[in-house]
Amino acid sequence: MRVSSPRSRRVGAEGSAVWVRAGLCVMASFNQPIGRSVKTLIAERWPAARRRGRIPGTTGPGDAAMPVAPPAYASATGAVTITTAGVIATVRFARPDRRVNPLSPALLHDLADAARHLARRPDISVAILTGSDTAFCGGFDLKDDGVAALAEASDEALAELVARAGGEAVEAWTSTPPVTIAAVEGYALGGGLVMALSCDFRVARSGALFGLPEIDRGITPGWGCLPRLVAAIGLQPARRMAILGERLTAEQAAPLGLVDRIADGATPALDLARAMAAELAVKPATPLRMNKRMLNASAIAPLTPASLVDVDQFTGSARGAAFRTERARFAGG
Image 1 (cartoon, rainbow, N blue to C red):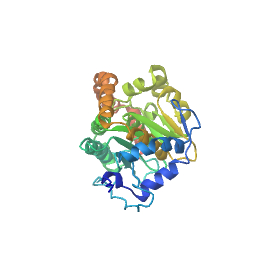
Image 2: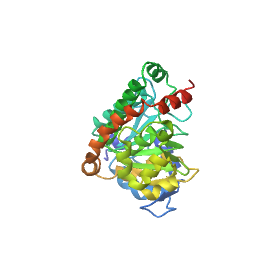
Image 3: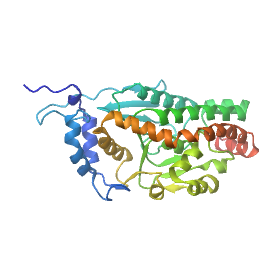
Image 4: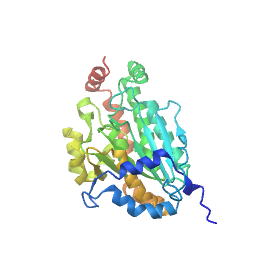
């Protein structure tokens, strides 16, 4: 009698729907032929992944679907949740009351905690980081109540809090053992861009925007942003983004290496990220983690000295009149 493993029997309506939706996607990738359908990709990867219990699915044509498990993690604020399907985790951070899904000190703390939670899950090989349905993240929220209260006391104290909280979140996501994929909808600006850079891969819906508005806000990018950006796309494109304030669409960002795959306008970035996760899910977990660690040691570790300097630069720029004026304007002051 054939006995299926508990893991191979994990299935849910959500997981099934994901693969149905993903089958309708068309990806544009710089390491795969443009126009190759995700349905074809999953058809190639599915049998091996299913045999190894790494992708949700039934053990046979007649097997009934099992209920979707509750979130594996939810932050105290409810703004960050983690759901799992086999070896794949999806981390969503969303602030429905804010249009561009901005960051706050509390949200940054929750994001760092979520990354540490993943680090304690040896059963998770791949993690997708996604924002709201309309925006990955538009940057830091100057209208947040806690931010406004601290800013009244001291712009420098505010900047130091933001620098420390953001740096902690970015470092936690950079170093978490699972391979990470940022699924970008709408905007990835300022701190949102840095969070995307902290992931190993980035997929985006066509037309998504990437940029650093800090130069026009009278402040420097923090959280190790500029060293990471240079490592990702090279010095001159990084100069244009950081000094000229140029924004890049997903189509412009892809040839530079900032975006790995692009979903067409009708396809959610999250569906394309899940298709990439399906590719990774069939690979042995230990080499995935080891390769990530070695690549980070080669490319990210040398950036640490520059990342430490940017805390001082960030807090120093907060003393300037330009930042105080722009903060008051954007915060409604």
